Amino acid sequence: MASADPRTRDRRVDVFVALGTAVVAIGLLVGLPPLDGLEPDGAALAMRVPAPFTAAWTVLALGLLAQSAALLAARRAPRTVLVAVSVLPVLVAALAPQSLDLFGLTALPVVVAVVLAALRVPLVRLWPTLLVAGALVAAGSAVLSGAVGQGVLQAVGAVGLPLLVTLLVRSRREVRAARTAEASAVFREQDALVDAAVSRERAAMARELHDIAAHHLSGIALMAAVIDRQIDSDPERAHEGARQVREQSTAVLDDLRRLVGLLREDVPAERAVETVAGIVDLVERARFRSDVRLDVLPGDRPTDDRSVADGVGPLAQLAAYRTVQEALANAALHAPSAPCTVTIDDRDPTRVAIRVENAPAAAPAAPTSPSGGNGLRGMRERADLVGARLQTGPTATGGWLVELALGREAPPAPAQAADGGEVVA
Image (cartoon, rainbow, N blue to C red; front, side):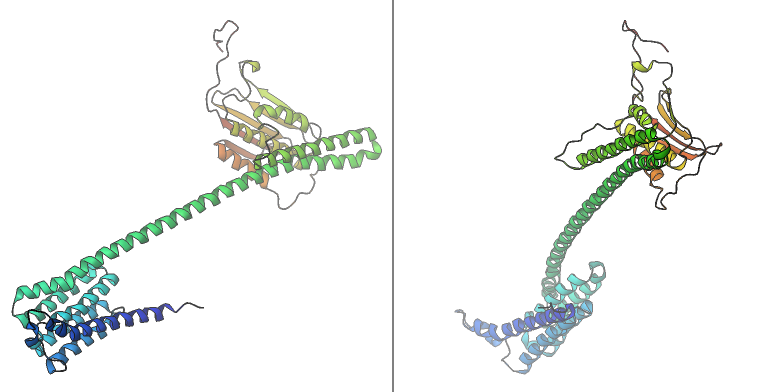
């Protein structure tokens, strides 16, 4: 069943409020005199209350009905309705002075009008109307009783007290709304954090998969092309190339298995995270498909006193390894016949510089996919992640250079002599 239209629902509420006010007011008008007559002390009110359907009684009843009917427009014009509901008792007091003891019933529609106005209009805009309504209620009561004090009390009871109660209710409602909005904001923030974490994880997975595919599969493709040319002219070298293809394929499976182990909680990783020291093995494997040379510049200290890239964090070392891996794959793909040099400069005590430079291609490179370009982007993302400085671009001789500078988290430990004394460089 479809829900009712909001406008229809609001009109129904307005009619219910106005009708309820009228029923209560007329019911009290009709029922109070008989109830007063049942008092054991005597029907004192009987002499001061107009008889039903007399002129004074009819004026009071019509005034209560008119006040209740005015409440139908309280949603559209709450301040105007409040003034109108407050003016009508003054007219009743002027036309029916005999209704003194039942005149207080005219305060009931005023109370309802104050509540409706306070719920729908900010107090900063409503207070002038409240003053006017209070003055009118006090004037109507003073006209009948002749006592200004009684009129002020009537105004306080009809305007002031309902206003305080309504403001308290509205403040509690606003607090609940603020708490609900705050909880919703917290949930949205948590969802945004989860989405950001998922995006970072997806980017990391994409980098790992690209590094694996770019390094191994590009080498397999190049070696397969060489085997195709050598299979008739040089079978022995073709067999050697086939063994290298098998080794590269096994390496791909190992790397993919390790990546799956990192992603699944129930499967442990089968291999430790790569480091700068692992670049040596990386270069050795790359020599099977291209001319690659490795230069390590350890500085004045002997290399066996401390490891390469000492003081560089594990995440930064992984970034360096992957950067070299990607640079070698790019060199083999875009300059397959050009020599390439990998230099690890470990002399600076504050940073480690790694350079991968290849000479200009002597033969045309194989066509590449138009969707490439992820390699350099992955290098920069890794460098930004660890706070390293990455420079890529062509060299003056027409080759290509990739240079990564990694800051040390701590200065390298000083080498110790055999007798425990410090070696001075």
